[in-house]
Length: 101
Length: 118
Image (cartoon, rainbow over all chains, first blue to last red; front, side, top):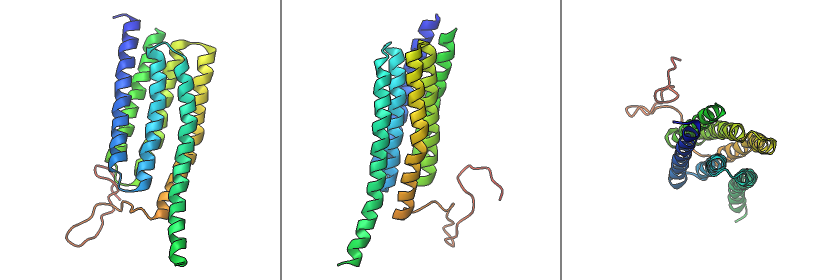
């Protein structure tokens, strides 16, 4: 087995393992009893997909996948921050509605 | 030779990705799950990006990989802090140990399988 064959085999294995982790995070997203559970699962899926983009860059010899990963990391942080703010503000709004019927 | 090193880094990253996913599914409450997903997830993508940089051995690729990893390292604690604060303020039920069904008391054993004697 040459080194190139070993590299492509291990890259494919890595892609499979990252896909398994995305599936596990999706299970938590589907099942999560509370809103923060789902936000944590989404955050984890974003980070895993950034890793997937890196592995795909090696598999297809395309450097452009790394740019996709960079943008995804930026957008994923924004999404997580916005969802966490939403979860906090939703509670505040409920309390305000209780105070002013 | 460099291919074998890059392969080892990427395989280690994949194994850590599975560990992060398992932690996300198996651990008992939000804050403990966040502990798995944030730290181990960032570590796994960092290892895979090191593998990418070693495979291409090119300055533009290395700078991009380092930029992605730095960005993940900067934003993961901030995002985790925001989610954790939201979870605490929403009053999400937290894990208090194993419940004894006879008298509704809680043992101080922190996690199933954790080896602690206090």
